[in-house]
Length: 299
Image (cartoon, rainbow, N blue to C red; front, side, top):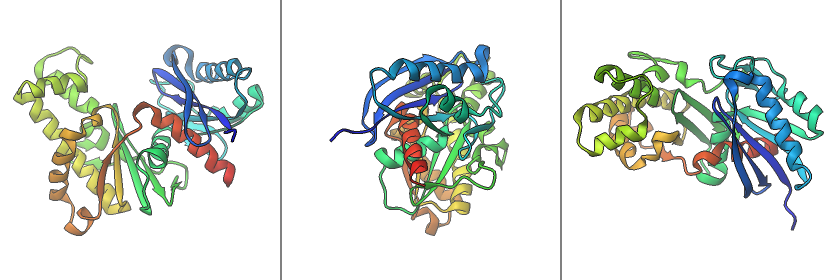
């Protein structure tokens, strides 16, 4: 049986991942390129995706273009409604779907990157019969997706899941509980250069027994638990999937988060909320972009 093939992109502020993926989620080719977002802006990113698609058309019988991208996305019309200008200048209000379709002749669908990651994980990484599922990504910021019966809940203006913007003690959730918040806090406390620490380096210090790093991650975990408990009370998902680079340390985060969540959740909700950790890693966005594409085509 010949599987239909799609080109899938995962657009971030610094890089663009791409892959040729079959309709069952099997990746047959993948690569990445520098987005040059800060210099080329949104138009440059779209131009790169169009050029890459055209370059692969002679070798693959492509059925469509599926895009996972930073920003608040109108997935019905394929428009980037808002993107952080310091990450991708000039990306807000770009009609990406129209541009890609006009330039390539292929159907295009796009969706927010966290939403795509959640769809990808639920499809191939953490398959579940639970009715309500949420995925949280923890990195420079914090984002969430909400999934009901395998379909995204996008909200009235396509902005559901912007959990990083909620207020918890200390400030906005993503400003006090993200990986960036934790590392930048350590840099200031220790008098280190800005952006000199990352999650991997922090865990090297933790494994060396350095208490200041242990305390910083403990604080991060407590703040994460507050935000996750807020999500659990409002949405009551059966599964919360945690992703983002630092969440690869499931061995460290899972037991500590479970203890912290017990402080903030009633036993009924706590005992019916399963924590899982992302399995697809860097491929989740591309895979989820395809899942979103197939969902859209089936509507």
